[in-house]
Image (cartoon, rainbow, N blue to C red):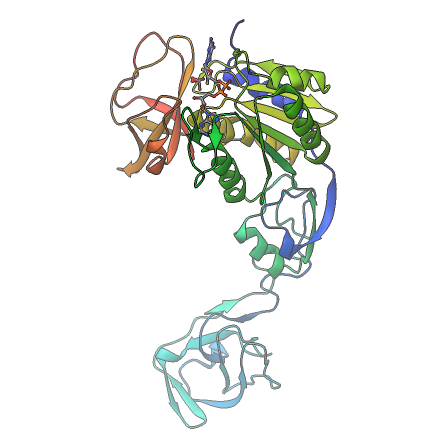
Length: 396
Ligand SMILES: Nc1nc2c(c(=O)[nH]1)N[C@H]1C(S)=C(S)[C@@H](COP(=O)(O)OP(=O)(O)OC[C@H]3O[C@@H](n4cnc5c(N)ncnc54)[C@H](O)[C@@H]3O)O[C@H]1N2
Ligand code: MOO
């Protein structure tokens, strides 16, 4: 069977995966969710005309003449007075500019004697004043629907008076780690068994990416056991991920059981290395990604494929993952049939992202994940990539 090109897998996700329902939540709970509306400023920013510095609010036209202090304006405590000719108000950063004042003299250029001040240099009209609404007026769109909420956006929304937002519900994730040979670290290892890397990897990846703890179940290489576990996972989750049992071996039951449970196969086997046997299907809006057992293949399938599916489930704008470009530090062999997704160390030299090939790239090898920052996408080719070639990459 012909292998599906990676870009064709992305196209299948776009046509098969639809956004989850929306709900309205408090801003405190919104970090990491994707906006389903375009929130607008409820207050202007700055909210009122205020001082950018600690100093004295004055009338610029008074020039260098001595001024009489008539009050104080601190942040949160506006002055009750206005500034007339020959007068000034002590003002602190963030304090409201009192009526009559049209400039602020920084205290470093002012000599103060009790309630009198003298400027050592002239002050420009409007000096050190932040004007009401100069950044945003009421009603300005702060962020567009489809944008994922990060810490900066939480701050921008809060300051603009937006205390709750309409977002897509976060996807619920279920993970099935299959394999009779898989034993959890800490347990005794019998002959032929291996410690489980995929359970910890999948759990950590979803937590790291803000989805919280997935439900993780361990399943023997047994059709009936897999059917029970997959059925429960499909009932409870929006995205089900399996690891192992998806190739052509006698105990590779994932495609068979998924089909039996009514999951519509969209594709099986992608022209990528690692991760070739990746299986993708949908059942009533729920997505199932059957990932191979090799841990490096799981990482690649998470970073490239699960990321794409999650972005679509959450209605995120733009194509995910977001590829950037960098240059190869050294020559890298290509694969003639499959695109390679290569674990790289990344650094920035002369303002350019430079990708350094790490050793141990086989799909059963994962020790290089200790120093890998990036996954480079090297298209299938008969000839090797050369040092200096520009290639797409994503963070991992
Ligand atoms: N005749 C063919 N054989 C294989 C093909 C093929 O096209 N024809 N494809 C190979 C490729 S490529 C891959 S990738 C693997 C994927 O196989 P499965 O998805 O069925 O995965 P398993 O056989 O269950 O496991 C593969 C490997 O990974 C180890 N493993 C499994 N789970 C874990 C875990 N949780 N933690 C650590 N290691 C795990 C498992 O012991 C195996 O060594 O198929 C090739 N075969
Ligand atoms: O696709 Mo497999 O992960 O190359 O060994």
